[in-house]
Amino acid sequence: MFVLIPPSVSIIVRGSPVSDLHHPKIYAARELLTRRYEVVRALSETLAAPLSAEDQCVQSMPDASPTKWHLAHTSWFFETVVLKVYWPEYEVFDERFHYLFNSYYESLGPRHPRTERGLLTRPCLRDVMDYRAHVDAAMRTFAANADEDTWNAASTLITLGLNHEQQHQELLLTDIKHLLSRNVLSPAYTAGIDRSSGNAVPLSWIGCEGGRVEIGHEGTSFAFDNETPRHEVLLRPFQLANRSVSCAEYLAFINDGGYQRPEFWLSDAWATVKAQDWHAPLYWQKAEHEWKIFTLNGERDLDMAEPVCHLSFYEAAAYAQWAGARLPTEFEWEAASKRVAFDGRFLNPGALHPQGAEQPELGELLQMYGDVWEWTRSSYDPYPGFKALSGAVGEYNGKFMVGQIVLRGGSCATPEGHMRPSYRNFFPPGARWQFSGLRLARDI
Image (cartoon, rainbow, N blue to C red; front, side):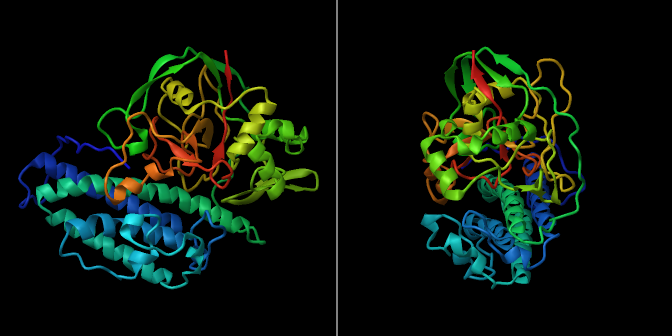
């Protein structure tokens, strides 16, 4: 779930009505969170705007959800976790939506099957947008009128809801990309900007001393509960590649028979390769003698300098084995990330695909944040001392801590302001529809 200590904000919002509030710092914190609510909620609708009502209803595979469902579920979260609990005057938009748009919260009752979300032609998109508007209006009223104690109690859940919505913004993009890729017309989500990555930065190795390092979230800002408790780990000396693996490098693996050579693959991975007939990353297609790739901006030639993406953990681990290296652990990744500025190419509606690394300073780690999520060699397990919170929000992360692999760093579809050095994403090892790539590591 999350850890959040209400911020101690010292700004006073000038010229705003504060008749029902007694402390300017509390009011400023409320004003800032309310403004952030508006910005995050607006981005979801901006991302959905290029899509038709038909686009927004279809579900292309069980792991993906329709855009319309994402828009409704994120509103369901605020309605169910905040408004129904903290605002007695709230009038529910439609009682049936509690069942339709619950995701996996067992404690909140039964829900529509995940695999059948694409069958929900009703409610129509207009009704879902009316639902969003209804919830947003109620949240504005709540923010303007809730007493200080009620607001303080609800603010941590509102912050969680905004981070939750940002996760769904990324899923909205990856899910619609998968859907459009299944259309024989190969339609583009948006025209976007086709940026060539140019020549790849030469791959080099950056040494990391290891030793005792602190891992996990620190400070009082927001973090999900799976990033805590902060704890100490012991690392042996290691090296990280200075950048993510490129398409050209991964193509060399393919051309060397990588998908036909079982010696590079874990047992479950090889079974998956055979069962699903994998020959290349998701969205790669060979047309005559040239490789094409499907992107959110449509189909185009493969850019050899850009990071390879839409790989499963199985493929990332096989490539690392072929390359005579390995994947970093999540602890190695986090320790190394502290050496670089927290900066990267995150969600930009005009550039929805990873780009090649820019020319570095000598010994610099590149692309640690943004572009592609990087698979690690770490299972998604609880940190020592982890305890899930009680109640429905305790179901947010802890119950998924089995059979998943950790990814780090964010991607070109991760909203700006959502990422942290301690952020732990996780997916099953066979998942490939996210913007997931890899960085090599090796022992010293």
